[in-house]
Image (tube, rainbow, N blue to C red; front, side):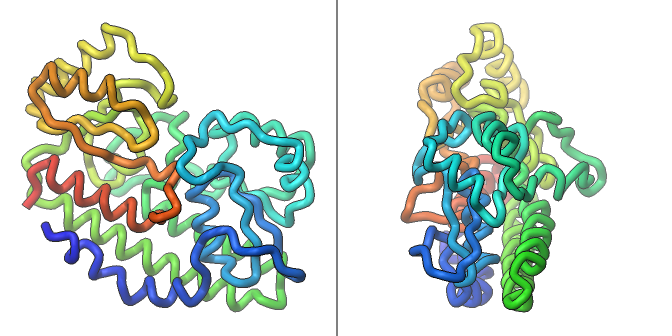
Length: 296
């Protein structure tokens, strides 16, 4: 699969989004709606849906792992005064505490997607897995909900919010189609990852995830857990062990060496660097899975 082919289906709609806003953190301007995003995927979405009508503050610096973020007094003040805080309850304890203490106006993404079922009920997901944004279909639901919340908060620009939300939904639909086409005719459906961050992605596309660590990327797996994952990899002829761009790959490389597999990056899209965005990272994820799983 060629990289150009992966990008081509999204180009047309991305041009529309580029006109609506680049998803970063624009300079503050009088009259803009202040939105605080608890992590990168939420900031990207808020920028795309909000466009020129919002100022987005991301609580996590680019290229930084967001789970254990610590907030400064200034950031807590931002949460308190924001028109809307976009967060995921249970994902970042410091953000949960600040939201509770300040009584902030929030959009909790966990409440938005709820227990939205997967097609065919495939791919059981750990109830504590927070990585809902890795599923493009759930991200469509979130984009629509965010557009409605902003439209109700800023009625003068309601049509713009709804229009941009619809454009994002279209892009995410093409991303979903890209994953589906990338993951057809595969010789395997089993993926081994450095931590269990890909339950929603695996569940959406019928893959089976086995994480070396649990839901925390910093958790040190026991020797027994490493041995268990190595057995899984051997029994299921796993050829690639995935690690993440923001996490030390040492354990993943140890398992790979033990079972004779290669390593590659599968990114949970948590702390995206400034040269990337949600879509570019997810396209690379589709390509990495396509190659690792021997898809046609």
